[in-house]
Image (cartoon, rainbow, N blue to C red; front, side):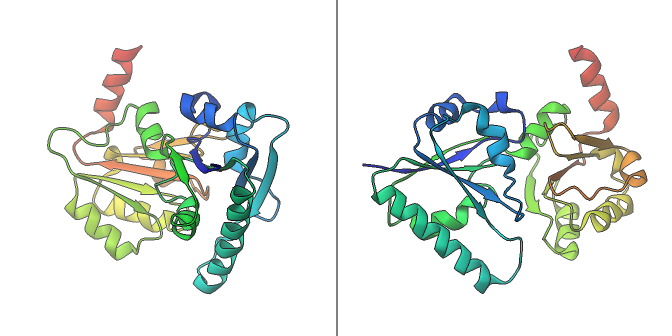
Amino acid sequence: MSKLYAIGVGTGDNSSLTLKAVETLQKIDILYCPTSKNDNTSIAYTIAKKYIRDDVQIKNRHFPMIRDKQKLEVVFDEIADEIKKDVQLGKEVGFVTIGDAMIYSTFIYILRKLKDEIDIITVSGIPSFVDVASKTNFPIAFDDNAFVVVPATTSIQKLEEYIISFDSIVIMKAYKNYNDIISLIKKYNLQENTIVVSNASLENEIILQGEEIFDKKNEEYLTTILINKNFTQAEENTVKSQNI
């Protein structure tokens, strides 16, 4: 029986795809690639294309970044129906997504539409905040630390509550409220406990830390912020020097 495969492709470095993700990409017939703009550019496809067969049918589908839920539901319904028909025609169908398909992913909207209609297999990928933590040697949590993962669309008031309440805070896609978030970091004097990474593992990757986060503007969509009250930049630099 044909299936739909949700494939997490990680954050940018195509060598970071899991072996299972590569094997899955190589057996599908049709691949859906989400785009956020009308130019049909899919970051997920760009990451995965090295492993996609030449004869695979690529279907770029636009998922608009709007808050109008009714309009979004129309888009989700149309794409979900198209995917369902492809699977029912006996095709092995893939849907690629940056990071992991189960963490703030476009695919979740499709999953909710189709989970009772067709067989779905999800192949995990490396989430951006895990990639960022590893590449900067910046621990997210240790000992009995608690951490929270939030989208930047969270209200600033709520985000401030999280900063007060948790040892470690992960803020994903922080481009919209970036300046407000940085103001909160400054308010609580957490700049030495903070890493900001945009476009992780891509050619235009940006890494900011310490006082740098106050000095440079950042309007990149793929921006992840890690805050750990129990880990400072000085410790990070020590870890880096020990790893050389």
